[in-house]
Length: 96
Image: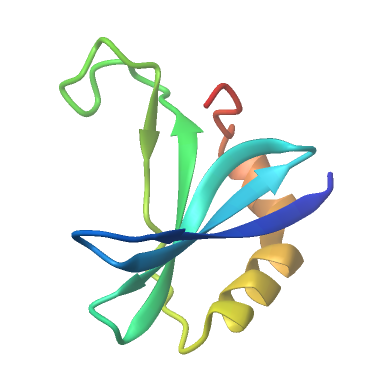
């Protein structure tokens, strides 16, 4: 399972950056900066129950890990170290 990251910059109204997380070339989530203070990891995962978020039209949902990071690099490193155990708990949506 190979993790890669790609930084995207959005210009215009939001002027923000986000880093896409990919496994084997398929996008599975992102790393984003919350309130210009901390970085969070938000993967796209398959739902166990299609109605768990009151949206039966979509088979996946975004989740955000509680862990916060002071830098994007520390978030990348943590995810790279934990991806095997995380993938045992969640099935990533790779259809995006």
